[in-house]
Image 1 (cartoon, rainbow, N blue to C red):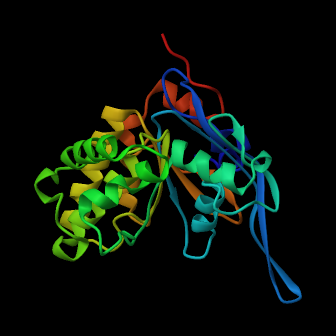
Image 2 (image 1 turned 180 degrees about the horizontal axis):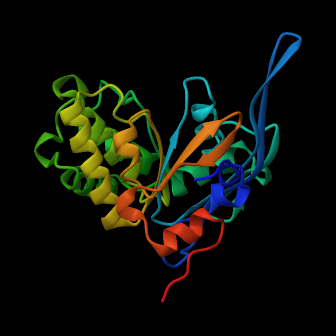
Length: 268
């Protein structure tokens, strides 16, 4: 793949899907500058990205390159210095803080390297929390939370508190909590960074199964190159912008090659 291709902005944002599905998330000319005393630090600069319904995208890059900053902007947890973030057709800049919170609850799920479960609550209560915050009645929230824990293989651990669960089980609970509202997209920041390799692999398999079953988009920040290579696209964050990394071998073919050249893939 040529250097000129890596610098192509269209190559950075085009999905390799056979037929282009619904656009779930888009950011246009995204920039983020932090002030440190009299100095300014440019973390992101003119970054473009499109993610489609059901697509799995890995974002890789060196520590300190701005990957977590990007996820925070995509999730409406922070605002860009310049540029636009669109989630399910909504411009985040047009929403106030309360509206952004409501948008996140309806459309986004979050999974972090540390599970951030509430220790005084059971696995089931932790998973139900986003539903209760959204105003779902307790019986319905309990039913949906239990079903999601069943789906991630923890139906037998619902009444256990986080301290009674293994690291892999706690992360499964965190994934169940992220998915229980049936979000359109889940943002994951090093979701298996604290797990051993075997447990991490189990979580990766679970994410692939849930993606296939629920058609949820996944945007994953990871240092795990082997895991990244199994996703639909791998993007590298470097010098404040995203560059398309070589598509996984099993994904390659005429349509993927077209996408790498910056042209929308075509179906039959």
